[in-house]
Length: 460
Image 1 (tube, one colour):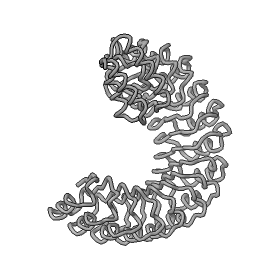
Image 2: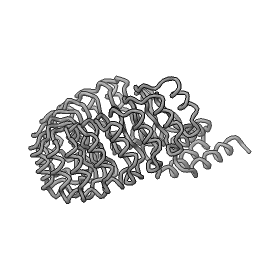
Image 3: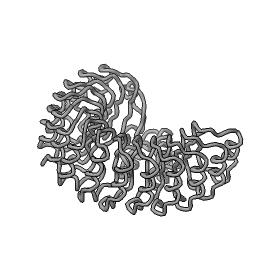
Image 4: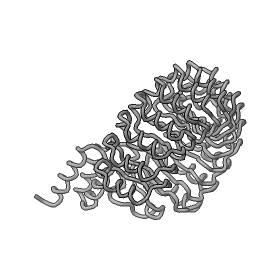
């Protein structure tokens, strides 16, 4: 068999397998070995077969210099380019914007590159980015002026996902975005860690261009009750299903507006962590019949105590809940018992209770709960759990599907470590975090020699 025939056979075999990252890189290596007409045929054959592969899988990483000169042979197959953390600055962004080799890209990530206004302007005016569906400019400094350039661009018609985390964007930038036709096709907008405030949130809520938006992330933006009220009462967000208002200034009043809004019924993911809800805010939220579609609920850092958790556990509306984050609250034994006894916990696959006060008794309640059989991730770090709590978890016949268990920053000793090491119920674990406990040599040896944790990565 001729060498090119052999390479083509290898190419065909890879393309008929399930798309994986390993298969992608093997595909590129195979094409690197081909030349001339066989290479052209191989590229065309591969291009046809990877159309259904995930955009993020068909990716490559590097510095901007690599893509300004002659790119690799397989470049036409690349859909996603990552040039993150290389500090290319405005000049690097300008050079990239002039490169005709970017025309095939569907996604471009330029995170943490010191790109400012001029760099944003160059990217916005580039005729080579018309196929982009995802643009990630997180952790740069494009500011409101850079937003203006992007908002006016006629070269980004295919954009569906725009990520602008930590770019010093204020109210003016939000207004410009809100008035831009560039938003018309957006399904995801991430403005996390900026400073748009209530007025910026109101501007977005008034935008008639956001009707396709399904995901909106406004984490850490100095948004209060008025901003949340505007968003949840907006007639222009009919497709919104994922809303993140984490780490803002929302209180009970904002939650009341959310509860009374029909928009709540369409949400499948709601993140309200690190606000000022308290027990009363949680009680109001979970009493709403509009919460039946929520699968992820983030309520960390809200000064929620046992009473708030009891209300959550007793709610008949959270039937779809699969992921619940309650870390960094004031939840004790009674709160843990309420969750353990709740029929709403039956659908939970992820439960995060880090940095609370459930202790051994709370851990025992969770371990003995028949309602937590579906759990795959359980975070109980920094909860004052000792050997007795660890033994209860190790002996639980209900937590057999756990793949991740975090017990770091507790007070487990050798006995607790040995119980975990000798548990046949924990054989599905892939990650076990036991850092910063009181485990000695005897406990670590038991973990190292455990017949049940051979496939598990144990953090010590």
